View 1 (cartoon, rainbow, N blue to C red):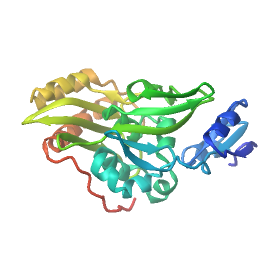
View 2 (tube, rainbow, N blue to C red):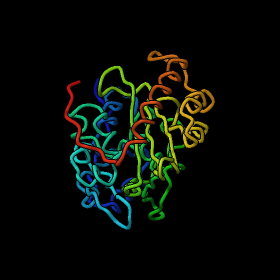
View 3 (tube, rainbow, N blue to C red):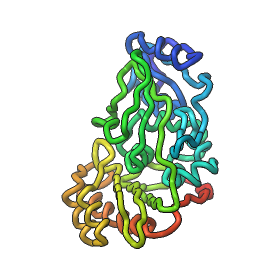
Length: 290
């Protein structure tokens, strides 16, 4: 199937993109790895596509004031190769190899994945686990939104139809940082049936500031707060048991709610071992064939 007819424009700058977004029913085109599929299936019928790939300055990775800033047009493969990501944003480094397959990672963008807000995607959960922030630009100018407030409902975010995501910002990892990541998918590169992104600080043998964020179990990334409290107190089995209260997954063709809750517990045990390891550092992962 081919997409319905649409107009096309190439934005020269962020300001130009915002100007073009003022027209009714326009969509931004970055990597297109999700958008093109929905266009071809005619699940999305925008009046216009605005190509932002030519905008300079949105494809960089920088370290500023104790934070890692990742431009919205940074490709997944670029992040996977980045020494700054591996050293200072290791949770992102752990998650990126699980995103699709090499062809998808070569074109897909960090900003596109987060703005699309698929509840089974890795990066939205990582951003929440890291207590990150998002830089948005709209007709009224730029604004910053915390990751905790960005994802609002299934495929819905704090972005309005006239806004653009320009970058994300996450705290740079330190010697005390601990991260963990794991997911279950039927095949490597498929969307996860259940996934877990975690971040904490080590204080001796204790974990503080623990954030356990699940994906694939709800309409948005889900923090398991009762499990966080139990695990922070050193009670792993209590944390696993608390998932039955924290998580409310549904049944679908991939798995029942009971299976997803069980898998969430298995992942928590795996990630707990990662969190107790030191230091927090993501080593480049070898390519795996689908």
